[in-house]
Image: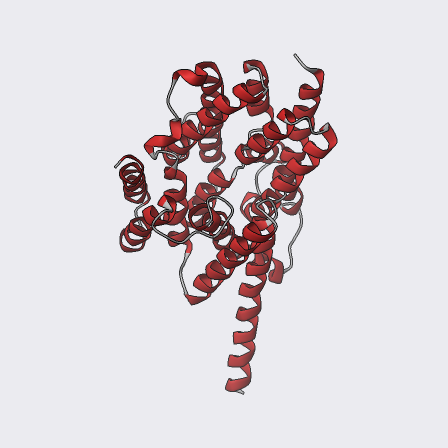
Length: 105
Length: 234
């Protein structure tokens, strides 16, 4: 086993864990200003949207809105079902089914 | 430890697990082909537990990049988790630090999405997070190792569309979080910033910058409309 790889893994684990752990542990101890709390309340919508947009609209890191982008096409029925039903399970079934059909037909 | 919330946590892990199995296996296959032994794949998933970072780091290890550059790149890629951890913090005020430190190890993009949706409607329960995070973590570690061991024996695990469970999950959870026009504005701005950054500088800064800008726009428009309504009522 290569020592360099082990060293890299240890380094990676530290720089991954600290950003996950420190804000929760430190910020939950202090009284946060109301404006900052308000700002934090927008984080879920902003994060989810920022994660989702490239996954469905730029899967190869380039904007791709067309029939050749399966992830984009599959997202259309997903959005429809999600908005109409607010049902997580149903949305996922529709998404997997749509993707399966697009990739294998 | 086994109580109702623990079981609810396990149930809520299903979509994440569905997505982690094919992506984890794809990572194991690729990593084993590129440079990592099965034990190294296990160690990386066990200690790091971060999908995108593991793909990037493995590609960099394979092309002989030095350790410091790899670790710094992973640091940049994972900075976005600071925002998620910060946004969870108000709900964890009564949870002991050691428990917070344990739960936050399992904080990924996907578990965060499930966590924060659950917190909108439920009182925080430690066992919920322990259940959810443990199952997702186990699914990731096991599927990367299985992928590494099976290697070329199995066809491309992402060809069945199962990895799309994660995008579909984000679509559903995003729709559940949108309550008013301001949320729609924040979501659209964040998506646009994220796409712009991905297409121009590439995808490691996109989430953190887009989120900070979009949340700031959200707060600003709220303050602005409050000022308008105050001045018009005077």
